[in-house]
Image 1 (cartoon, rainbow, N blue to C red):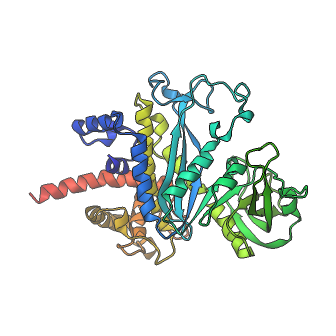
Image 2: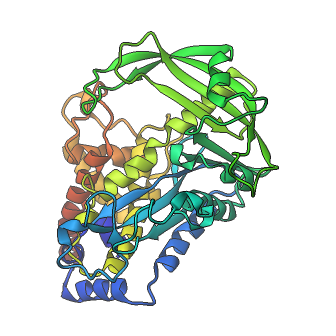
Image 3: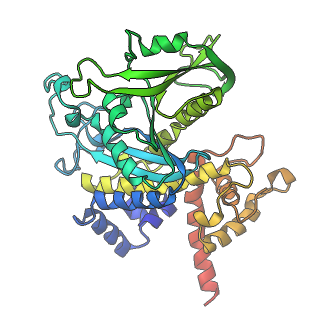
Length: 444
C-alpha cells in the first residue's frame, strides 16, 4: 500500500489499487483494529532512529488541522474526529509531526514523533474551562513538550539534536525539562521574558551590539502584496538567564541559560519587515554561530511543505471519501512517509555536486531502466537541455521527473518545486505501468 501511495500520488483507495481484490485489501487494512496509528508511527520513527545515528539533526515541530467538514454528513463522528478551529461546527483532527533533517545538509530523514488527536464534539471554550488555571499537562500546548520528550528518546543515538519550534513552543517548562548535554532547543520568542534584575529579553536584545549584517533575497509575497526585494539583515546576540514566570510556582527556583538572537531588517519600506527573535540553548559564541542558528530556523519551512503536500497541493487528504475518521488518520500517517521520499528528491536536486544521494535510495533498478528510456525524450536537442547528472545520482532521476511534471529544464529557470515533482511522479508511474506491461508481454 505504501508503494501504491508513492506511485499513484492519490488519496483515493480505488485509484490507488490495481484491482478489486487489492482495493478490498487496502480498505480492510485501514479499518482493521489491529492496524493502529501507534504501530504505523512506531515503524516510521524506528527507521528515523536508525538513520540518525551519530549525526547532528534538526527535529522541526509544527501543528496543522485536517478539515473534513466538506464530508461531515458521511463521516462517523465517533471515529476519531471532533471540533476544529478552521470552521465553526466543522469536524476534523489535529496533527503535530516532528520532521527530522540532517543539520549539515538539510536532507530529510524522517519523523521522530507524530501526534494525532481530536477534540471532543461540543467542547467548552477556553474561558469556560478556565484554561489559564489548568496544569500544562492538561493543555493542548503540552504537545510541544511531549513531542520533544518523545523525539529525545527516538533520537538518542544521534550526536546532537536541535528541536525547532515556532512561537507557540515558547513555554518555560520546556526550557526546564527538555535540554540536556546533547539535546537543544531553538524557538522563536513569543514572550518578552524576564532575564533578571528587572530586565526584559527583547529590550536587552535591542540594546546589544551589532555582530554583523548580511543581504537576503526575498521572494514576492502575493498575500501581503509585497514585491521581491533584497533585505539587509542586522544580527545581534546576547547570553541570558531566563527567569521562571511569576505565576509558575512549580518551576519558580529554575533559571535557564540561553542565547537570544535577533535578525532584524533595516532601512526597509516593507509593510512587515523581517524581525526574528530566536531563543536557543545551543551555544552561540560568534557571528558565525548566530548565522547558523538563523539558517537552522529558516529551515522550518520544510514542515510547512509537508503540510502543503498532505493537503491541496498534493494528496489532498481533506477530500478523502472514507467514512471512518480512524481510517483517514492512518492513511495520513502513511502519506507522511511518502512525502518524506518526495522531499528527499526535492532537496537532493539542490544538493551541491558530489553530495547527491544515490538513485537507488528512491527508485528500483527496473524503474531506473524506465527513467533512462524516458530521459531520451525529456532531453532536448540543444546542449542546454541535456540531463547534466550521472545516472547513479538521484539528481539524474529528479531532473527527468521534473521535466515530466512540466519543468522546462533550463539552468536559468528556478529549480523544480514539490508540486512539479508530485505531478511528474504521477505521470511517470502511469508510463511505468505501460512500459512494464509491454516489456513483460515482449519477453513471453
